[in-house]
Length: 417
Ligand SMILES: Cc1cc2nc3c(=O)[nH]c(=O)nc-3n(C[C@H](O)[C@H](O)[C@H](O)COP(=O)(O)OP(=O)(O)OC[C@H]3O[C@@H](n4cnc5c(N)ncnc54)[C@H](O)[C@@H]3O)c2cc1C
Image 1 (tube, rainbow, N blue to C red):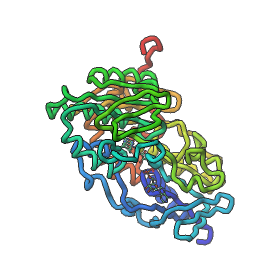
Image 2: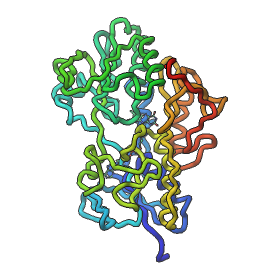
Image 3: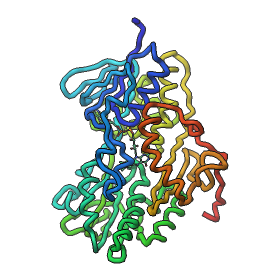
Image 4: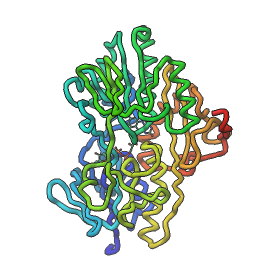
């Protein structure tokens, strides 16, 4: 028993739970696994989108964190204060410390609304909301249900954010919701983004931009929000442009967990962790690996990404412990259902090198890509079941693996984009 190694996992959300459960199965006899989290409620975050529209309830989205972990994994409720990669130790807010052989950082991203001038001042929670937290989504629901006339503005303060399509989905669902309530003609909907289009990648950006236009949703691009004056109802950009609103729905600036900033050499200026894009080993130390939103990688901060990373990450922890060379096969695979209202959704699937393209997923037959369909909407709803019963337990899903499938994708000639 003396040569058992200790894998310490910081964060028991999507990535920490997937990593722990996969490792437990991969290395049942040679590692002790501890998962630490400061909060015992595991929230299904994709469900937050539906809360403001009364389509789901908090009780449907929250489960006890420790119960998502397989037997044999130790779950500890504690707040990480800092990591000392030189001495392989982690300090906690209560003053205790823990050592590790391998550290997995799965501490996600935090919302930093206080970083935007005025955002959390008077009017926050009354006229300006975010649906990116459970409390925020719950507070927004009655306001949206009673909104009959005026301007609703959905604003992304800056990138990166979790699930970069969620604010677009909010716009599409708001259009549907207001039409269902018979007040859409009296309400203008505007999407205000720091990007130069609806999305980061050209083909998807064009298709999603067309969908926004079809639904009468105005788009304001390249808007870097400097100030939010909630009382006056105005967004002000750093270059002096103003967008007025009666109801503001803001996705605040995101950063990595605060302890990263207190840990010498671990993070970047936003507290995300520089990480090898293909092996998921941190740049800070060879025995530190990173999964999910905590990583400073050019991928979407999404549960799907976290799931795909989990396969490579756990294999690499095994290799690291065995002294083997690491598997550099993570290709940036991401996919996401984009709810578009009226019982439809669009699916996108992409990686570091291939942008979201039309076609089908995962092969030539399957779910339509970059196209609205009821089937995709059912896929979006099914994802919640998959999350609790397949993703978190760390099961491999047949046909949906870490490598991005190419068989069903159609190339789009540059001139027709
Ligand atoms: C509104 C919304 C919609 C979304 N929609 C989708 C979608 O449709 N599809 C999709 O794939 N993804 C979606 N996502 C993104 C997805 O939920 C995240 O990318 C995913 O949960 C990331 O997992 P993670 O493990 O990196 O972070 P998390 O699951 O957030 O876990 C991080 C954990 O670290 C813990 N932690 C942080 N700091 C400390 C500390 N100091 N001490 C101890 N514990 C700490 C936190 O308590 C938390 O439990 C959405 C997210 C939001 C907000």
